[in-house]
Image (cartoon, one colour):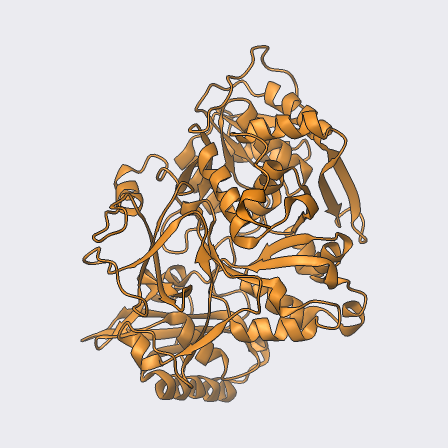
Length: 569
């Protein structure tokens, strides 16, 4: 489709979009939830646009809030979450997409976010209402969106495009969670950019997602994009995916022109966990595309996924590598509808900040180019634009970039208010904290500035070191290794923490031998002498809410002695 043929979104605010589709296509399906908790086959529950609008209006009427108040969404994944999120906005408040207190391992983060955004009200479900009330305390009104009780008779003021729609809290991989302030205009601009960049055909598309709705990619894929374009959204619970990943691919095959997105680990999980008999039943030739984003993309994982599901009709060109972050709503770059491009760069050159193709070295996946926004590779110390082939910090400029962090003026100025030297617009620019390089017109992601390991003046990218460590033994869990630097006597020292599937049954001599093998591999490949190697049971390497390795948190655990003694020191 040509750019001018893309249909416009349904309105200039999220609420206007809901009203538009409820008026023009009232009986068309807006949202389908496959409930695998109620039925192993996934009982389908569907709301039309009219039904969704009616439920949103009822829940909004139960919220006695004023413009600018925050309303936290503490619902489980499903239709009630969508209703609660949209009701908060329809009531004139600022939505804060979060999760119910029962989500294991996230109570501390939830408490920190609630303290930061100070909500006037919380929306949840009747089943979770008591637990939510105990968690948030008596000073915050709690409304069950599936059992709303009218609280006001006055209409909410109509939203304007520059009004704040919601706060998207970051996953906290390198710092405490911070709420990105996103307006209606930011969000709808990003939908338009994604449509252009991905080539999505709104006339024949359905979005399918298991991603948590409190995460930026999950929210935009599963709720915002369908709402803006009038598409059908098909949702499932993340736990249902973890239990049986084939469910996701079955839902994709149930709908022609289906679109989805997932982080890299989901591709590996499907390729390794779905049985041959289940693969044979899939109909992946009906899929339009699956976006791969949210963490460094492993080309070997893509190859394995493409091989595993080729017989089911999946083609490599359906995988769309992408790059994005919450501060830019979510979408920044994506590649063309073609087989994903992987380029091998010389490792020694990368260590000096140059990307030089080589027959042997580091294999990186291209994440394409931006659509409707600008991306610059910048020297973070001088703010000068770097030429193609130079590794620099990724800076972004466009209408999708958020207004800042909620009530954090200093951090907002530092991250969202950067000024650029050169011929591009001076600013403001978003400093992503990510390192990348532009090669042959496409963006490659090298890592995060704060995670960069610098030893004896040479740069080492932690994901590269982690991949080398994981290659030492098939029992080391892929994507479950953390490499980070700690202060040494004269220079930084490097530590590797790796999850091992059979750690409980691993004898000490075998554990020491494997640790020694990891040291040798990393010494040979990277010229690094590791300070410590620690093999730990599954689940001991911390992750962010989006599944990325939380290297900073892992370092903190190591320094606190939580992992015990190192091996073969």
